[in-house]
Amino acid sequence: MKDLFSIEGKIALVTGGSRGIGEMIAAGFLANGAKVYISSRKAEVCDATANRLQEQYGGECVSLPADLSNLDGINSLVQSLPEGEKLDILVNNAGASWGEPIDEYSEKGWDKVMDTNVKGVFFLTQKLLPLLRSSATAEDPSRIINIGSIDGIKTGLFDAFSYGPSKAALHHLTRVLAASLVRENIIVNAIAPGPFPTWMLSTGVGGGGDLDINWDEVGNSNPRGRVGTPEDIAGLAIFLCSRAGAYTVGETITCDGGAVASS
View 1: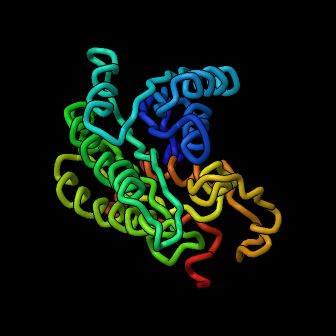
View 2: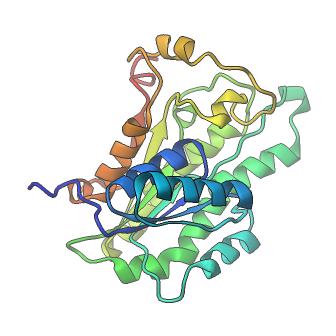
């Protein structure tokens, strides 16, 4: 029972891992003995984060930059993994949003969000199934965590009209994938974060322009009286990837300080 939450020796890929919630999860995995690949669109940022996390937490953190909104980028990422590498954990965290007034909302913005948040998650998962299957056993299943949002459960605060619907789609995709893959010893769940001090939230859920967020004020409006911390999101991800989470399948778990429950 004492190793219920161990992920020691696991190999994980965290997309969107160069900042924000992805970086928080990658740090938690490294600190608890996992080898972590991180991916993000900007190579310099991804490389710098991988080096910093490795120096700070030890272990091995490897940068694999890629644009996961299209199949070329997805295939490039999959092919950049070392030949013969295992994969125990996939965290689909890479995401995008687009903020514009409803009368001006563009097809470009709509497609960018749906391509990254829904299509990209499905096809990256599809391409990595051979690695996840090869690591999976009945006693120790492989894990997939999709990072959704409470905006996929309740109405968001910003004029990001495709973001909430894309996350709602991701939550349902999680259930569909979970039902399909559970008998192959691959467990799929989702996390729906609430307010965390991230770049995406500070720019209006990716809508452009620094909103200069007062995080204390945001925290004061949350039922817990604060915003989320790295320990909150990393702890939940570690639970889902450890023996403790091996019977939790197809769920979307909020990590929001009670925001949805109180709305």
